[in-house]
Image (cartoon, rainbow, N blue to C red):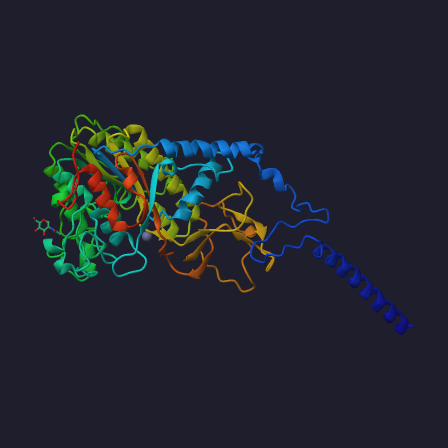
Amino acid sequence: MGYILKRFLLVLGCFVLALGHSIREKRQISKFVPKDPYHPQPALNEAGEVLVENRWQHVDAEEENAAFWNSLAQDRLREQVFRRPNLNVAKNVIFFLGDGMSIPTYAASRAYMGQQQKLRGEESQLAFDKFPHTGLSKTYCVDRQVADSACSATAYLCGVKANYGTIGVTAKVRYNQCGIQADPANQVDSLAAWAQKAGKSTGIVTTARVTHASPSGAYAHVANREYECDADVRTYGHNPAICQDIASQLVNNRTGTEFKVILGGGRTKFLPNSMQDEQGNAGEREDGVNLIDEWKRKHSNGVYVYNRKGLLQTDYDRTQYLLGLFDPSHLQYNLDKTAQTDQPSLAEMTEAAIKMLQKDRNGYFVFIEGGRIDHAHHETKARKALDETVEFSKAIDRAIQLTNREDTLIIVTSDHAHCMSLAGYSFRGTDILGVNSEISPIDGLPYATLTYANGPGYRAEQNGRLDLRRQDMTNKDYEYPSLAPLPAETHGGDDVGIFALGPQAHLVSGVMEQNVIPHIVAYAACIGDGFTICKKN
Ligand SMILES: *[C@@H]1O[C@H](CO)[C@@H](O)[C@H](O)[C@H]1NC(C)=O
Ligand SMILES: [Zn+2]
């Protein structure tokens, strides 16, 4: 009896299994099995229709027409064919630097910007996407494959490649070898210094500390980017009397003292440790010097502001020099700002700088940095990196509105890439900051569209991969998945873009060493140390 029942159950079990198996088989051996193992194709049913529900909701009706694409392409072609090179001399130069703004960063930021406006996003354009001329910049430095913001600032501002971590000095100066940084033979001057020699007004603007690596490239000469104040020089075992710090160089030395505009963060690098700034943060200097007072003393008709309100109240006609330090350190991320945050946006600082500088009939040079794109990437906080890139783009839009492309050259570039990638075959308009439309057939889990090769977003998992559907990727501080664990994500060694608009912009083309950029700018503006051939018109 028991034996017969067991036999029966076994046969029944086999039958059910076989049935299930044959259903599965049938689904798999539909006649439309994709043959290419590298490029997954949408799954099809027996009738050859795409299985995924709502698959076509992402397609816009007008994009189904050839006429739509042909007319857009023809418009662009006409622009290219009829464009005449702008052969004017650049009276003014605005140099925009997106720190760490890699090519995937702006590809993703475009989508983010469009999606904020309820568009699908991929077709949106950042301010510099519309520039007529572009090239690629090779960013390696003299001693390293992948650049930091110091050696690269020396390249794109001073025209010479340098060692990792060093600013405004030749590669003869090794990292932290500060005894020889003050020797003029080892120093290289920046576009800002060249512009000053040619009688132009100059300035620097950044969302980072004004003593941070990128803006320092415009005025400082240091063997170590971290010598931001005298106390920092001491932490590296050096005497600040021999190895002058960056804040002191900004206030006391040749190029820095002549800046008409200095806007950014980093107050505590300028104040003695016996003092507090306007918000109660202790100064960092050990030499007892108040460099903000020193700056005021040197510029009797200068104005110092420390918040947004102060900046917006500036009387540009009456102010000859403007120093704005809006944070004890870097300015806050745009996404972290609240109603209480009294800090200007990069676009507001850009407008203030242009209004200050355009009073000069000889023209101007200004360096404007979106400094925190880089920091957000280091934290693998992709949402903030994209948001800072959009803020950077808004500042460029503002500059375009306030200037004339007949006499103002605008350059937009980056110092180095990052190791974020944009992956998968998501449907059009898929949240760029979310998971991909398709699930991995190997572990049955989704994956993020934006991921990093390394960084703090690494998560050790015991049982396979983390299920991202249980994560809040909409949080502005969400750390995107990273392959290798590192306390900070690293820069990338890929080329970065160079975008140019205005006089001589057509000279930006092809793949160039990063240090060629300031030579092109100097030629366009007819400034520079004699190695630039140009003809004033
Ligand atoms: C700054 O200027 C002073 C005075 O001219 C000079 O002694 C010093 O070497 C300069 N600093 C650097 C880093 O060049
Ligand atoms: Zn960085």
